[in-house]
Length: 161
Image (cartoon, rainbow, N blue to C red; front, side, top):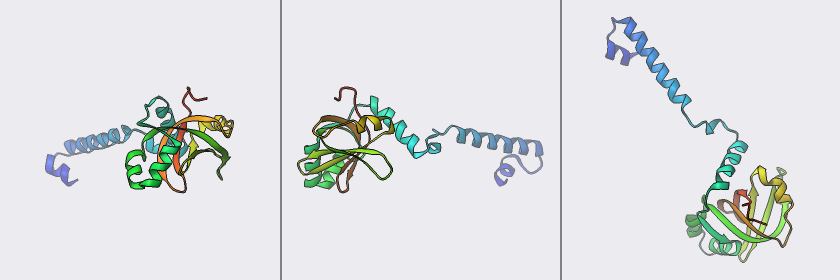
């Protein structure tokens, strides 16, 4: 109210109410113009990111062996180069599994460890049909290394077998 009094004085009630209404409308307009992503569930945000990723060029192309060697050799440098970036990883399927949330994952073999690939929901059925020994290209966002190098929100490009 102090700002209203400052701008319009205490005596002019009509202008004061108009100014308050104007400020409320500006606030509501600003709130309604947000992107809306904060209102999406985590699953919806993952699917939205996967849809963008399908058409997005990978920032790097690397084999599973090269990726695991990079993280084993210098994790900080590998984080700087790959973490939180969309990358295309080529490798051979070691195994296919399902995590505790019933979401499929694929392990790609590497020379210094393995790459664990977590898929966007759209690709769950396709992931479960992959076979050990199969050559595969996967595009996803690198999550860095925990026990394995993690690739999440992964999509299977159309050129993949």
